[in-house]
Structure formats: structure tokens, C-alpha cells
Image (cartoon, rainbow, N blue to C red; front, side, top):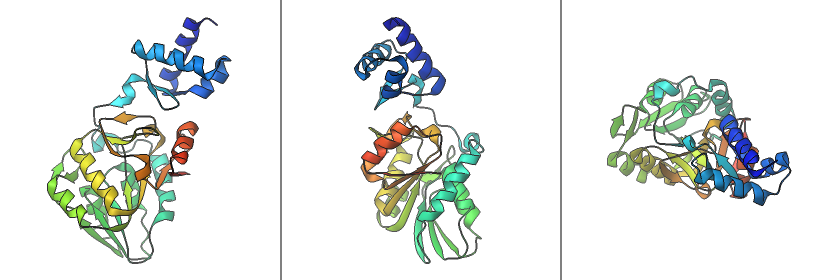
Length: 255
């Protein structure tokens, strides 16, 4: 196969799969990993893909547009339910405290919280607070601030000040994108600021992210892999990315 043919095939793989890894492509095309990296560099210069740690993703994987909560609700519902079920294993015991970040995957966890123990839930998400307000055994503390319509979450200085004074057992966070080399990202600076404060407030930090969030970068980073103790995702996640996160010290749980 000529280099041009191989590069065309690589570009098609990235477009069809949403990602290609260097090692898998080298095996598939019978060439060295160095050859694949050179091919990816050529395609990146041509604007056909974007290189990331261990491979490449489509240019569109670096997202600037943030989907509203209503647009995300119902997407990958089965995977999010599985992630929420796996997250139950990381809840603290009776009289424990957790942070629940906004988002559809953390909302799935809110749906299945147990009622056999007393828990304090701290959240900036209006839908989650409303869902849990009358749940037996659960006390809800909602963080104040400016509520963003697109996420229905409180953000801003007031939210961050409150979080700065808190220390909870576990912080459960969502993310819009994550890569092993760059970390965890979200499109909005105000949301990122709150997420950073949540990371600092948690004795243990657990990110809930379906596999569509992996190998995707959005505008603002709120955590690097070293900040996160556990990632819970679904079985569609890219194995190379999970291995890289594991090497970075993140415990990976596949639901």
C-alpha cells in the first residue's frame, strides 16, 4: 500500500470510529508505529484529524458548543444507568457526605441513591436538588449562585466561595470531555471553575463519564488525571485511553 492510500484509509478510520490508536493502526496496516505517527502528522497538517495521546480523533472532537441539558437527557441512557449502578459502590456509609455535580450521568446516580442510610448531598444542580428534596434519609444542600440555563447549574463566585469551605467524603463529577494527556474538560469557564472547586472539596474524586466523552476535548480544563481517583465509564470506552489513565494513577471502573 502506498503512503497516500494508507493515509486515506487512516482518515476514513478516524471518521468512522471517532478515534484510531497508533498501535492498532500499525498492526492493521503492517507498518511500524513510527510510520503511523508520520502519517497522522501529515493528516493533521492537512486539517483532516487531530492527534491526541496514543492516536488521533476527528477535528470536531475538540468541541466548543455545549449541548443543553434537555438535548443530552435520554442519550446513552443504558450506559449512564450502568455507570450510576457502579458508582453506588463508592458511596460513603451512614452520615456520609457527597457532592453531586450537574449533568445527566450524575442525575442518573441521584435516581438510584439508597434510602437505607443518611446522606448529605451537596449539589449545584437544580434538577438534582428537586429530585432529592423529599427522598427519605437524604439531606440536600443546594449551592447558591447564578443558574445557567443551558445546564441548570449554579455557577459564579458565590458557588465557589461555599465550596471552598466544604470537605465532603466523595465528589462525583461529570465531564464533557477527557483525554489521558490533557485531562478533564468542559466548554464553559464558569462551569470549569465550579468543577475545580468540587475537586478540591472532595476527599475522594470520582468522574462519571460515558464512553462518548473519551478522547474528546472541550474548551476549558478543570482537572488533570492526577486530580481524579476513579473514572467510571461503560464498555464502549477505548482500551488504550483507559490503560493510559490507569498508568496516570486513575482507577478505572468499566460498568
